[in-house]
Amino acid sequence: MLLVEGLRARYGRIEVLHGIDLAVNSGEIVTVIGANGAGKTTLLRCLSGVHPLAGGSVTFRGEPMSGVPAWRRVGRGLSQSPEGRQIFTNLTVEENLRLGAYLYADDRVEKDMADAFQMFPILKEKRNLAAGGLSGGQQQMLAMARALMGRPSCLLLDEPSMGLAPIIVAQIFDVVKGLKALDVTVLLVEQNAYGALKIADRGYVMETGRITMDGPAEALIADPRIREAYLGI
Ligand SMILES: Nc1ncnc2c1ncn2[C@@H]1O[C@H](COP(=O)(O)OP(=O)(O)OP(=O)(O)O)[C@@H](O)[C@H]1O
Image (cartoon, rainbow, N blue to C red):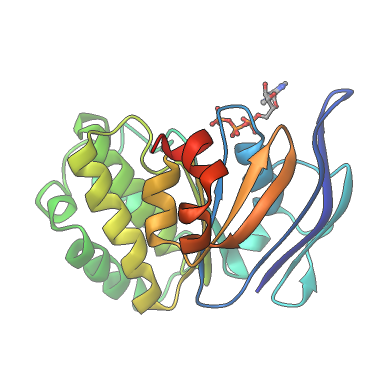
């Protein structure tokens, strides 16, 4: 579904991604784990089209994404739920969700909203409240629900567990796992390596702008190098 070949990215003259190769197959949950600053966010920004490539290519459902702006990528089924959530705090929960469906003006929007409320009942309860008043976990749920309103076939998730209490993190990871049943393919970028690998099919390890390991998630969890460097076990 998503193929990344030799991807390079820069900030000014400094290259931070040095030739990334990865693939996400339809129906998979794939995670990219790595320390703070490894380049995970930059990678997702390149995939969603908000940061330019300095080399290499991104192919989504067989189509080269070069020259395809971010908003068109959303229309083709590739959506990002950004790090730090970036919801519209002054708008209500429902208004935030409607913005996620900005490409559509059909009857399905109401059904998608009902589906979102079923997946996150707390958002239904708070639908008319300003999003800025939600807790961190609820804001993360809103960010994910908003991305799903764009009807993605592939969702790019940037650190959904960031800054959340462990019990909320577990809920968020459960929801991500549940996206499989909705036919949404997921590329999940996380510093919470254990939580991410537990729900993923496959994983990649990123270190200072390079992929250094990859494999089935269980194999990575069992690997002594990963256990020592990322899992602390
Ligand atoms: N706007 C920017 N300008 C210059 N350098 C940047 C910018 N954003 C990120 N970088 C640098 O690019 C590298 C990769 O950063 P990136 O945010 O992609 O890493 P990350 O793995 O997502 O880390 P985090 O978990 O903190 O988001 C880091 O060295 C970072 O300092």
